[in-house]
Image 1 (cartoon, rainbow, N blue to C red):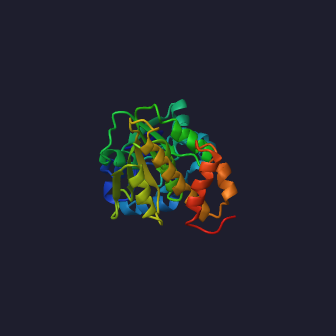
Image 2 (image 1 turned 180 degrees about the vertical axis):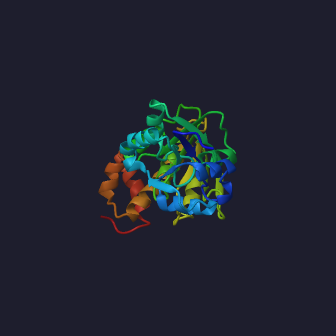
Image 3 (image 1 turned 60 degrees about the vertical axis):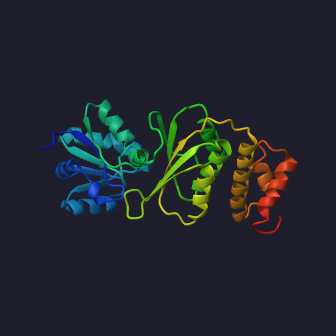
Length: 291
């Protein structure tokens, strides 16, 4: 029997329904309310376990700060129990839930973890990279300067870094990692626990090559990076940076960026203007006419 006025943070499958735990099923069948990031997906999951008539409410990023106090009010006033689920995986790990859990704890409502699937732990466990020191940074910043600042801050951490990335931005992030950390080791996971699961362990060059061969990636990727110890100013490292910048520039030219645009965009990459100009001409030879 579920105790009164409690919240259960329930992990749900990231791809394979067989990964739903017996304890998660028991909780989802017993609570009064289910707060879901996506109510449609939640109802499909509930149908799978035989609970078609559960009360399911929408609880996603843009409403969670506002809804958290209201939900806790309701739980306390009516002595109700609630299960929190995300689209897939474990709530509060780059998914909604933080504000609700925080509000509940502040007001004395018990919060129980119901552990299970997570893209983060799935990749870490099967990556082959060390996990003795681990930093999870969620989704990387969208803006170029913020992205460079974030990735640049990894240099002295001495840890493996894990992040989630959208398919359309993956190549940009990998190219910057290539430029800054040519000796890094990289693990990439996609379609984890699904039929076409793929886990790659490689270096930055291999990661970019893999990305170039997967032009139409679907779904988020999970990436784990271990920074190498070799100096980044060797001739080989400089050539790696040059290759990475060419790859970046080609992608920008594909998007109709002009030569002038990219001279400004890449002016802080440690090259003289003439060196950068020649490099961009080399990249531009693959796409379009000079603007």
